[in-house]
Structures are given as C-alpha cells and as structure tokens.
Image (cartoon, rainbow, N blue to C red; front, side, top):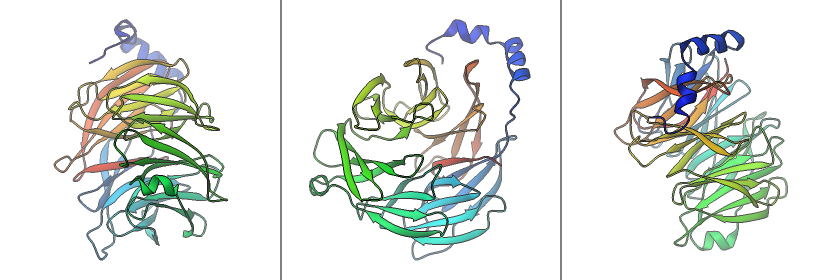
Length: 343
C-alpha cells in the first residue's frame, strides 16, 4: 500500500512507463545469490526470469554449513559459513569452488571494498574482524575492537568498508542495556578512529552518491541516521519504524521495516532530497536484507525466519517510477543475505 505520492503513482501509468523504458537503455541482466541459512545452500536467481537457475550446496564440514551473507567482487562469490568459521569462495560464472578461507569464530556480516582487494568479515563470537586479501584469497590480518566496549558485552554485527579499503565501520551490539555503537577503524593501523552511540540493532551502508555519508538504520529506535564518515557526526535522519536492512543506489535509499509482518515492509527514501517518497507492503513478514540490480530497476528482499523460503521482488525506475510489487521467488529455508552479480 502506498502511503505517499499517490498522485505521482497514478501519473506513472502504463503510457508513462513505456516512455521511460524507451529512454532507459540498460536491461535487467545478471543473477542474485541468496544465502539459505537453514539449508546450507545458496540459491542463484536469474534476474530476467526471476527463476532459480542453480543451487550451490556448501562443502561438507565438521558442522552443518550455515551460510549467512554473500558478497560479490570481481567475478567471485564469497559465502560466509557461520557454523564452520570459514568463507567459501566460488567463481561467479560456473560457480566452481575456488577456495575455503578460515576466519574467526561466529561469522556474520561482511563487505568488500570496491577499489581495493579487501574483504572484511565480522566474527561475533571471537569479537574480531577478519581481513581477507581477495587477490590471494587468504586472511591477512585480524582487527581488534575497543576493549572497553567488549568488556561491557558488545560484539560486532554489521560491517562496511570505504571504497579504497582504508577504513572500516563496525556496528557493536548486545552490550549494556540501551543503545549500541558504531566504531570507525583504520584497517592498516588496526586502530579505533572514532565512535558514536546510536539506537539499538544498527546496520550500515555508505552512500554511493556522497561517499562521506554513512547510513545507519536502527531497528530499536526506528530511525535511519545519516552520519559524516569522517567523524560520525549526525547530518540528518529519517524516521522509519523497525528499520533494519538497507541498500543505497544513486539517490534512492531502500530500508526494510522488519517487525510489522510485512505491513509497510519496504521504505523508499530520497537520500538527496532527504525525505521518504514511498512505502510498500511485502507479501511475507520479516523483510530482512535487500539488493538491487545495477540498472536500479529491480529490488530483491529476503524474508528470513525458520519457516520462510521466499524472496520478494519489486520493479521501479529511479527518478521516474516508484517501486511496486512484482512477484515472489521460492528459494530454500531461511533466506538471509543476498547479493547482485552483474553477469
């Protein structure tokens, strides 16, 4: 259900959409990889047909594999296996197994630098961050986190890295009652540079439009902060209930409302104009993580939980057409992290 800009939605009918498509030359291509946490597998979805075209079964190990998040970088797909403290690496064309990289204990969120050969992996049991060289496919360092926050029970959850791989941003959760923290780290020096107390259960995404802005949705406080990446000062904020998953492309910022059973489950924000432009219901509860195709025209959302097996899909044209529900894809059990592969 649209809450805002009803008139704009009516104007963007079939005739307007045809004109928009005629002038927008990019087509949907590539695949989306979905980590099925409770099935030990990764589903590969063709974005042209929205069909599952491949299912990767993680290699057997001491424990039943538990894929959490997936990252695409330079023709490789990285899969974080929490149960076995490892990253499983595939090539992103034939999905052949390339390497298994040991990490710390408790693999959770991870992210790769766009312009450097670095992948960061949060380990929430060891309370560390593993640094992986994506050229050699090996762990080259372990980042430590602020000892005073760890002593209070905080542990790393989400992670993001600057384009050139110099600095990391890590969310720390589950410490003292109240708020959580964002810390900025120098990767080379393994040193804390700054920190900020934020609402509970924060997640992270650096704006592709303004690389000096870090978006921080907080589920507990129902807000999305826009922070200065230099010193973590607040620039502005949006009010989004149960804000959780986040993805930014151009001036569009997409955020999931994870806790209302799918009602108003996907928010669309104009990050440049600094306002909410749309909300959509999702067909299932627990809308969790988000990815978007390179042309910005399709949005994929995982619905997580022990009994869930769905990814919902939305169509849009940034700047011309607001998102609308397109359909659903059945994957395997507890779809969690997902990533777009541009081929």
